[in-house]
Image (cartoon, rainbow, N blue to C red; front, top):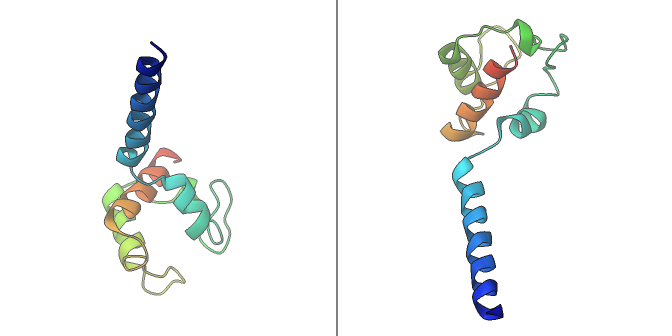
Length: 96
């Protein structure tokens, strides 16, 4: 009985571990590491506040990927993969 219980616990733990892997990158964490030095959620820093950014996900994705000419916004298309960029865009849209 103890052996069966141990196997069930081990299987459950493996299942939880795979759920975390499936969940994908965390946009909030990436934002804190890569974006927060220039952007805050509520106030303007070097770059605009998240709450005042364009709410169009396609526009946000383009700007994060390719940067923005004439501003200090650098492209992150080579620093972040597509899934990470999508996570950051989802974070930005959810905080507007």
